[in-house]
Amino acid sequence: MTFIKEESEELDEVKEKHQNQEKPCSEAEKKTQRAEAKNSFTCPQCGKSFTRRDSLKEHLRIHTGEKPFSCHHCGKSFTRKESLKYHLRIHSGEKPYTCHQCGKSFTFKNNLKVHIRIHSREKLFICPQCGKGLTCKKGLKDHIRVHTGEKPFKCHHCGKTFKWAHSLNNHLHSHSGLKPFNCVHCGEAFTSSSILKNHLKVHTNERPYMCSLCGKSFIWPGNFKEHQKRHSGERDHVCFECGKTFTTAKRLKEHRRIHTGEKPYKCSHCDKSFTHEFIRERSRTTVLHVEGVSHS
Image (tube, rainbow, N blue to C red):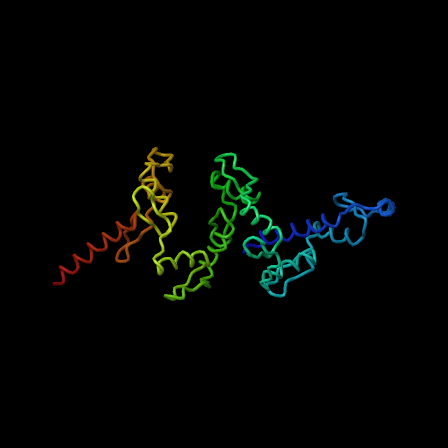
């Protein structure tokens, strides 16, 4: 779970809590508030005013960067005590918000609100490019990267960039070597629970993606989509240098090596390099065959 997402969800809960507390006031309360407003506390940096000194003190941490509330589990720090309280649920596993329709529980109230839209089929946020409906603003923001190609999440180890925060988190395991998710059937370890979930289909022989045109079924959605393009003839990946088109980004990437001269596959027997792995393996087989003949 990414810290960026956690912080956003925590702030949403804090904001909503304060909004709920702002109930209609009586005339006496309004007079009190007006009196307090006369003695309001103003931020010297941005000019924002507060009725309580403690509120101003808490607000100033935004400018100073002070985060006095630290998690004793992971060391992450927060400007508000309330934010730390919400964060601790991640470690404790507490999920106090439950969907009354399906029983699924959530750590944060905002997550439950977004989830409920799945049952009501409410999709308030529409992609202006393809018309796809999303249940939350963040979902739309993430989806738009499919069209723009934006990759805002960067690995500080190798500089590789990603469209999604969870993809970066999974990638970071490749540097640490950590593979915390193990298959109970074969013991193979994986960097994320989603990869393990897909791997388990190999053991169950589950093939949930079936082509309606030819009946062929697939374990992986990516393979299914690639297969469908063979029927439709869709070739939406275009080489900007020569105009040749391809059904997948992978095929285009391999083709681009013709123009760049990149040869990432090196022979383990000599210094020769190849543009494709299958060419290297074919060359290796030929070398081994010749060596076998020469020794016989």
